[in-house]
Image: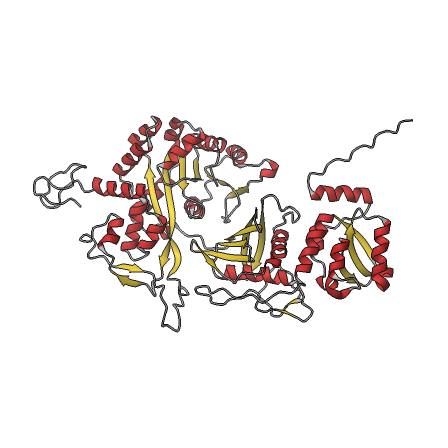
Length: 601
């Protein structure tokens, strides 16, 4: 008699599905990673007859002690002999002990995180950090003789954090990091595992700063797990990148945090992007201090239909500019719809939709649905593929004003980027109203800036002549605080406070659109744009230097490239074709006037 083969069980697609299948099979709940993370670590460190090392060997962990007895999480596949072994070792606690199943991988992660909080931590030597010498994240979290890490001082709580004074030290540690970031206007937090420990850096005003001393490396798993739990990510998945979000309230402010994890050599690198939903929306007149550029942008934004593209790298302020444009168009008489990933700022009176790629809801899908929603103005968070680009252009060609972003270096590069995506140039020339490229420079602290005179060599690097800049006052940041008892209270000794936008605005004209439709090369398009009066990024940045709002060093760090310098020189040449000495007309290639021999500036 041949026995029938056993039917294979289906392979689960995710730990959540596996837990669901086990619950149906076992007829009882299977603990989730979040429930395991809330375990009382004191029970592992001596609250039971079993030592911490033995709990790790067994692969089980105590969760809590309630009026009914001790609750212990065990692997779901344990047989009766292993259960009896555990009960024997628990001694008197066995009579009231309840065993609850969990996935072994979830147990392993939670157990390691809990034990990491109860091992001996050697006092870390603070790394000298400019502006924050000797700061320690472990200050206020001290070791007791039993090698227990205990929270000694309360910190301002994020409103959705546990209010229990006996909350886990790692919970308090992570909250302290987040609170410090929110209070210091940090845009990003980097958790970077290294061979010696965990390095934490804050990005403020576009520059990364080491904020604390290096944390012991045995805290890396527990801190990473805490961040994953807050972001509702799979804490057992450590080999693939994951994205999530954390929503918190702090002192009445709504904080949205985007979370990205990435496997690296010494652990998982975690980067947090902080978005303050309650931040005051800035108007265009605050963002753009050049009257001509402001007028050009407002003229484009007031058109009834067409496409406006904002380009620049990540963190260049593209979304802020788009929201400022939307705010000017926001009116009960028109219908405004946006599709974003994620929704960064809330605007009253408009329809905002967030993409959900797991469900197939991407930019192009939402955009096609918007067309049937009778919109007047559309905002597409990012044009990243051919389908989204073509759908965006089709919307602009059918009577809608469409705003979107594109990742490229400058305004003219946008046409090469769209061509690379496979968008036909004649569609681009027929739909595009203009392209805006922007960057953010650090703004000088007006309270401690230092006036100085740059050398001729320094000015020559930017294509400037010392004779033409003789009456300009140049400033630089005050970074040397030696011999001073206190640093500037307005910028905390950084020399900069806040950022200011730099804009390059290309407006489509008839001759430029014709060149785009004919697939003209980028150099020819750039020449035409300059002839039409486009101000370059470098030229805009140098004007900010002349106004004392930023420094030559900032312009060099963010804007100075060979192609940018060549474009700026060409722009100056196009706007100075008349001799200043005798008024005679000059040609572009002439370096001096052939009539009075005056050097052309």
